[in-house]
Length: 282
Image 1 (spheres, rainbow, N blue to C red):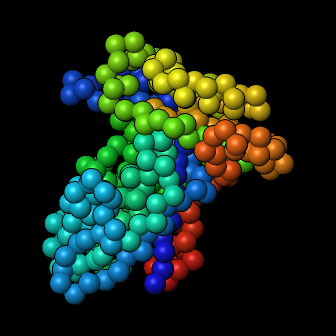
Image 2: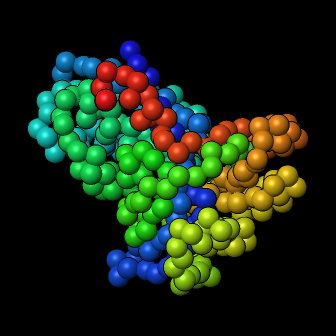
């Protein structure tokens, strides 16, 4: 029985350029995957039901994003197959690494293959967007320049750098940040060339740093080693390094105080690397 990766993502930049009438914010952001993953195993069942092997305490099974994704595929295609979903959770929840969205995307992509549904990548991205704004990029499967609410994606090749991620001991409420009166909502749009030249501000940073002392402290500690940045609305902060040695050194120095992950950037999602090496995708 194969285990399938659901990788984390980082927002290497996040600009808020406006707000739609429905309240959604218009963004420019850059997504890159890292090799830190949840792992998902799909166990076939004969009764047509979708269930979780180990439901998350306090979360109704029907609300879990993997269950919702599987049921969405069944509703869309009329598929009568069932599955019991086993999730090995490694990505911190509420950290801005996209764990729940990635789990949902892996469920959509893999069950589309296992159930022989033959939905296109574009259709899966469209379905994914109904589950969350970050789901499409995980279905897309490659580092991307993103606009709109994060669903308009353009492939971008980035340096695959060693990265240190810190997860402060707090949960940042994304809704609270996007509702904040002091959030910048009128940043000027930039081009990919501007990002590559070094413009990688995160418009949520000031608001999050002001409200969450643990995030502020983590940024200060990490910035001793390299430029420290916030991914999404946090709480995770990260820094990229030019060498594995420098990243290991920073990680070792920080791990006694913080929950630290030593990772590496990857342009192709580990999910699609694995799919290509399996019998499911050419």
